[in-house]
Image (cartoon, rainbow, N blue to C red; front, side, top):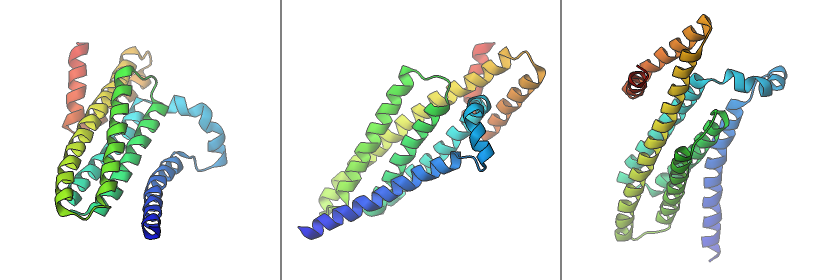
Length: 218
C-alpha cells in the first residue's frame, strides 16, 4: 500500500513538472528584458499587440499542439503508455496556455468561441485522466480496449482544436482586413496590407480564410 502511494505521488510530481515547465516558459517569454521595458509594458501592450501579432502567436501555439497530438498517436501505436500520458499532460497545458494567452490579447470574445474553448479543455482533461489510468494497468486486453477510447478522444480533441483555431484565425484576419478598410493613413494601410500578404505565405489554410473573407467584402 505504501509503494502504491509513493508511485502515485511520484507520478503526480512528474506531471506537475511538465505542466509548470510549460506555464513558466509561457510567462518568461512574455516578460520584457529590461526594467524600462517592464515599466512601459502596461501602456504599450494593447497598442502594439495587433491582429498580426495575435495571429503569429496562434500559429505558433497551433503548430506546437498539432505536433504533440501527432506524436501522441505515434507513441500510442507503440503502446508507450508512460510517454502517451506525459505528452497528454503537456498538450493539456499547452491548450490552456493558448486559450489564456489569446483571451489576454484579443479585443473581444464571443459565445461560440467560449463554447469551443470549454469543450476542448474538458476533452483534454478527460484524455489526461484516461491515459493516467492506462499506466496503472498491466492487463493487455484492458489496455487494448482503452487504446480505442484514447484514439476516439484524440480525434475529438483534434476536431475541437481545429474548429477553435479556425474561429480565432478568422476573427483575427477580419480585424486585419477591417484595419485596412478603416485606415485613413497610407502608412498604416500599407503596413496592414503587408501583414496580410505575409500571412498568405503561412500555408493554404490561411490563404483559404483570407480569400473567403475577401470575397465577402467585394
